[in-house]
Image (cartoon, rainbow, N blue to C red; front, side, top):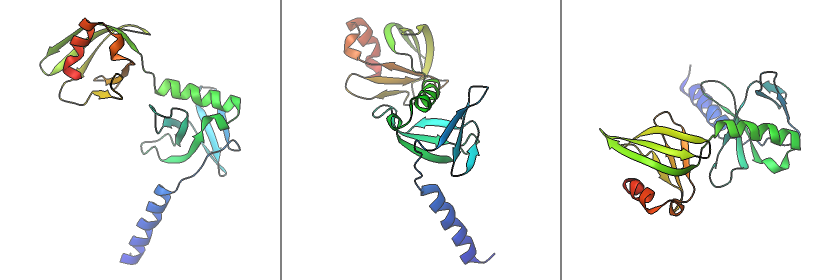
Length: 179
């Protein structure tokens, strides 16, 4: 293969990867019998698509990426705003997003124990009591604002503290290591 041919192939692949394809209300989403979502877009049916928020904490219902369900998770297209879709489609996609972005809210901190480079949390969430661990050397705690935190545990589960200031002084002291 000539060098020019190789260059043209790479240019074409780069163009395909960076092209923005907009998914609109005219495209067809269908629920499978197993509860997954299929999408028919530009004459092609994609099975068991992945639904991903591009800005999950700032614009949760805007810029939703629809991706193929394979190892590469290649993007099929983007929905600019879920509110532009019909009610049934919007509900299907919101359900998939809730499953994908399950994030219990921490309401009370019983204990945080620091041991051997890990922090062990014992908390009460809006989904019940929970214990989890984070790696202290990683960036497992993300400050979204002065008072809002996202904590990712060792299994990549996410927990949210919506307002650190709403916690008791004793609970906030336990978090001092992360603030």
